[in-house]
Image (cartoon, helix red, strand yellow):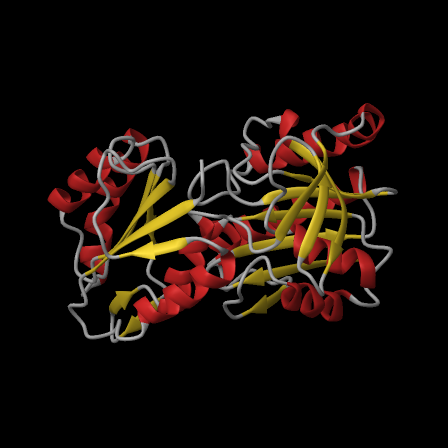
Length: 332
């Protein structure tokens, strides 16, 4: 396959999207994918194709069916952003969304609105563009594969941590879109061991655990060993590794109801929306975590990072404690 083509279909019913196409084009040029207004066709060649629909109106089941039916025929994946005039309209859409996502085996992403004006909600341009990358090329770094597999000794060293982390991820349902959300990572003498992009954690696909050797910020190049691309979070993790040599264990989860969108949770640092997979965020995390042996950072609309200088039982007891506090805060 040659690369990704994003077929944009924009219905700007609220007059919000005047700059969206130009910004998408700039992003595509920087990250080496293509954006077009042309509708996808079944004979699309060797490129991978994403249909990206900005509807800017309440969910229409006919639109949802039309987009879902094209997956695997005219395009590989699809993304839709709806907008809702009232909370009731948003709630009424949930059964249709759940049904469509199940039927398409999570190849259809329906973006949750992140902007609210007098009760009417829509998806910001920022979130649209970040999601466009996440649903197509996935990563913003330049990958350089060193070897096709991780050394057996490294796998043996880290596997107990990854199994325990995946068990917490599974037990507490710490995802939003699906069990492919987020990443698990552990510092190693040779770099950072991390899950690949689109790796299932419930149950864990342990063959998709990779070793990241280095990250060169000047050239945006990530060197790794393994059969797939490392998580986009690898950039932030390698920046943390450089600046905070004691930080060891990491989990990035999308526990939206439990943690991300729970303002009553009395722990952690909360940040407004940030771009993912960029070194600037790693530098910001390093500043927040300096002189601390563990820290929870929650990013608006994106998820939470559990970072600590310790692993093993102490690390997982901490996560269990955060989850327990979150559950208690929801019923208080």
